[in-house]
Structures are given as structure tokens and as C-alpha cells.
Image (cartoon, rainbow, N blue to C red; front, side):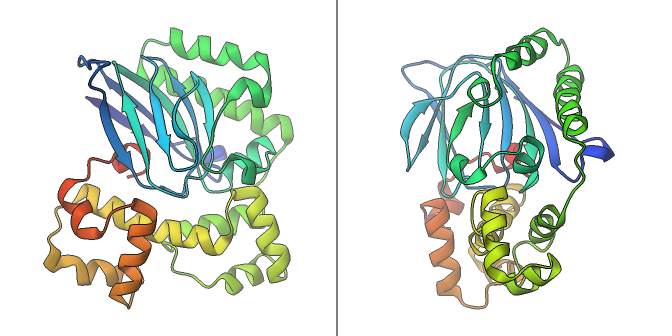
Length: 274
């Protein structure tokens, strides 16, 4: 298994969280696919699948194949990847409002969806898929993606606005922040802020804050060894002061209570957002 993450160029950093290349050449039987669970990360993505086709299972759509080149909006619940062959994936992971800002898309329509890029931007994006397939190294693949996004940025002469700023602030604060404070920071009334945030990110600011809190917890669990006795400290760091509230949120977003998740989860949080 090969996985490598790359940082974006400074001019794209307000919109792009990272790039990653994920490859595995191990044999996987189509009759016995590997199923990998992942909680919602709080980040949309542009994904190119250069290996064998695979499927994703969500509560919204059930089990469906993913396009070769697609945009993925906010995930609101745990999802499962069903891998049936060698993995060769390269992706750009966007900051919460990044997709909506760079492509001018109504992100509310992309929540829990994986939509073919050609259906969104047209047939000219087939060239992007060809360039990625022809690139010989992970760094070359990332350079192709970054060039595509840089042209998108220049075409629309974009600079980050207050919605980009406040959405990124939720990430840096791990979801522990007052929504009214964010609305004030954006110089908008609460109703206007909620509407603009929903359109740009795909979910409401309150719901997104909940996603980030649980996403932070899952990221910590994926990258460290935690015992049940450590949970009180972890819960406190995530901004929960009531254990029943923590369990309710965690179970809602992951589909498992914390004890079960810690024991048997096989999700790829570190591949999607470590």
C-alpha cells in the first residue's frame, strides 16, 4: 500500500487542503471485495480513479459505482468503499468552501454525492483524465491536478471571501466555535450567513461544526492508540462536556458506538483527511 500526501501551492491554500496519491497493487478478488469504512471528513474532493472500478455505499444511494473522474461533496454520514482490484487514486481534497468557491457550484446539491466531472464542467475535462493517466510519478500527477485548479482560479480571478474564512475557521477550531460569532465575523445576519454557508459548503454551519468535531475524533483515533480509559480526555479535547452527547453524535455520524468503532473499524480517515 502506497499513500502520500502533498501540500498545495500558497495561492491555492485557502481553497485546497491537500492532494494525495493512493496506490495498492495487491490482488483483490471481485467476489470478495475489501470494504473500507470512513466517517465524514468535512472536506469535498476531486478524485481520479486510474485503477480498477470500485463502488461506494452510502445511506443515501446504497451501493453504486463511482465515475472515473468525479467531484465529491460533503459526506454527512459514514460511507463504505468496496474495492475489487488494484487501487490507483489521485485526488485534490478541498477546504470546506473550496469546491463551491473554485467551481461556483451549489454545493447543497453535492452533499453525499459523487458526480462525474464531465457532467459538471463538460467534455473538455476528459483531457484532465488523460493527462493524469499518462503521468508516471505521484508528483507528476499532483502537478497535473494543481495546474488544472490554478487555471480555474485564474479564470475566475478568485480571492478567498468571508465564507471561505469562516468555514476554514471551523476547521482550525475543530468545530468548537459559536455560529453567531462566525456570522458576526462574516458581517452577515445569522439568516444570511446560514444561507450563504449552506450554498457554498453544502450543509449548515451548525451541522458542519458537528461533522468537524466527530471528524477530529476519528482522525485522532485513526492515528493513535486509544483505550476506553483515555476517552474522557479525548472527549474534553473535542469540546464535549456530556458523555451522552458525545456518544449520540459519534454514533449518528459513524453508525457505530465508540466502543465498537474503536475495536473493529477499518476506515481510511488517514487517507481522506488525517
